Image (tube, rainbow, N blue to C red; front, side, top):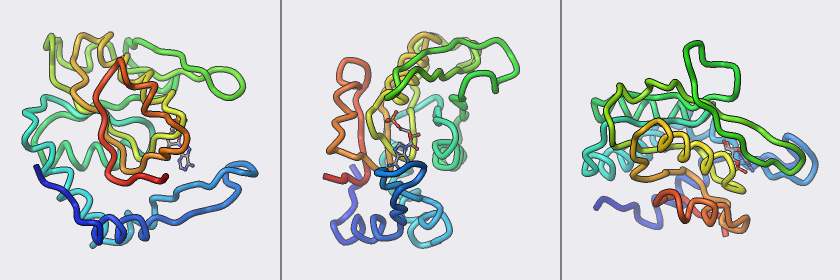
Length: 183
Ligand code: AMP
């Protein structure tokens, strides 16, 4: 299994910009646009993901709106498999299934197309997003993959805000992997 050295992880971490108080006071936003426009960092990350997931015999990659699309669609093209968008409610044009999840105040909802996995029962799917914080979005997306008749073989994140404990929400739903951990 391909793994990154600590030097490579530090390089990736330093390529991500910290933006304090965005989108609201008290949040330290991990801005991956600075990783994306650093070609060495972006290709190091994508090469690592390609080497790791090339061994998984995947059928599809599902990316969470919107930054999960960037990593997920690029990885799907590298692996020669299909990409499935997991979107916020009301964005997908054909028949969907939806999953609600709790936010700090209120609820949000994610959707996928009901036929996203081509009717292939048990299709092996990797779920990907840029970051896991409280884990609500990823848990809802992994449930959707199962509800659509596929298997979520792993949920992958570029960054895990480990101090928020979000991966606990995935414990009974899917295995998970994070490239970078913020303790
Ligand atoms: P959660 O459902 O709490 O795990 O939130 C995960 C989603 O919110 C991901 O799609 C992230 O892109 C976004 N997100 C949450 N917190 C941050 C943060 N501190 N920096 C960047 N993105 C974040």
